Image (tube, rainbow, N blue to C red; front, side, top):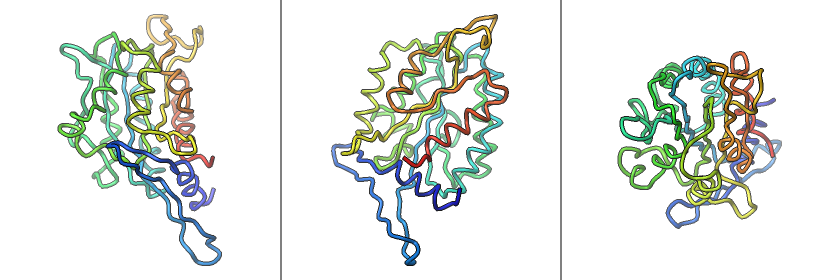
Length: 260
């Protein structure tokens, strides 16, 4: 697909209205035919949260996702996207490392040196996290205004699409329902006047109880809550049991830059 078509695809996806502080921020495209030598202007901002399950059994899955990060970065770079990327874990509670951006610098951008390598390494969060995964509580914590104004400063932008990519081989045990967290994201990133959402949730995990996808000690736990959020937002649901997760990441990339 020609580059300008991909750029236009992202542009159309990002034509939304967002407000994080009560003031309206418009996602607008000012386009005219390039045949007349005029430019197509588009909003190219996307804030990405990588939500990584770091409980027992996850290291193999983290490793496979990690190997796909250079491809993801390459696409973002080729489209000249203005992106922020952070990594969080599912390990909440006493002694857990959830509810905070991981690594230093915490926010990765197109200006980060050796970005593909840094992001690939950051996906590898290990298996020492709590086995009661509470990834959505972790997401809620890092999106609180207080956190975004202090330790999380520099990530959130009112006028950027927010894309969450969650990796887990179990269901989420956070206290709220999928609707609870959808409401949080809707408040943080309100839909545009045309109803299009300015956030999208994507899930790579166990999609159904099946002997073909058992991830630990013959155990299978579909990520029901994660899948519900993906459905609410129109995001992708991908199997964690594919051979190398390349198709999962490719489909998620395509969903973000899709021409609607």
